[in-house]
Image 1 (spheres, helix red, strand yellow):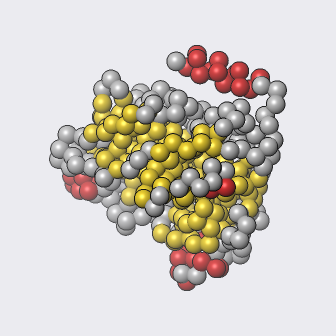
Image 2 (tube, rainbow, N blue to C red; image 1 turned 90 degrees about the vertical axis):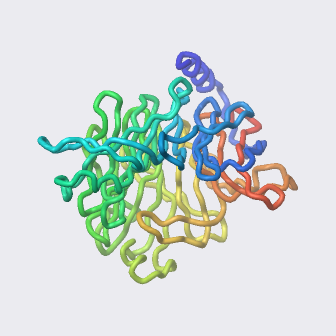
Length: 388
């Protein structure tokens, strides 16, 4: 299958004219599904009524739950059709301290992987931090949530600390199992992983300093923010997505107020954030906002550098990250930031509210309303080769 994908992508790369004209999309109705991710084969995963689902070629079906569990949520899908997400159910906590045995939990919130062949399998969790290592069963109440998966089957995510904040990131591989990184009393938040194993997210140094971070081979790099480096009185930033080329997207504050100050004074006007793009060499660019908006945030970037996110005037400040409520956008180097609602057929009955993922073909999934009712959508470019 990978050979076919590579051949197709090579063919696309050799097309001489990536048109610089405005893109237009057709809309596929995904019904009640709330999509979270799409792969190169246009397989879509999402959630409905506390259950994870997969949509492929017009067919939707549940991914089920773990043994003894009742809830599952899908977070990401790779190009082999392997899904990761979070579910509750029976699971094992692996002790990371010699001399302390593993613990079994009847109801453990844990990451999972799902395949066509084997269905849903829980990955369990590990002891982190060491606060309660002598009573490992207490970790049965510590949830681990998956956020991304790459083509190698590597899974990343986060765990809530005992103080109800994200405190550690984790990486799971089939060879080495689960390991934690970052965290302790300064929260770490992990959002995604590229096919080359580059992990992106956010590190913190106390309540007033949160900075976007990239991890390569276990080494953390501070990506900085608009206006320079991050410190406790100037700015904050977060990385949400990364592609195989090492391009990273997320958001950064654009004024001289720290994210901690935003939480403390509850004044969004004093904490404007903008969608940003970091190059592989670490140069940061402000992607701006849609006309009339003051804030924006970038969520994902595909192989060809197309970016999706949200632009608006409402920012909800909930730990660990602010969320921009408004209009979904697609950004490219050629066309800049465009409101997705202006790129679909007029009078279609659709209002697009949120874009959640984009694949290499420029197909976008998200949520909106169709004739006033909540529906998921799949946007497909009318010009399949317009990847500028």
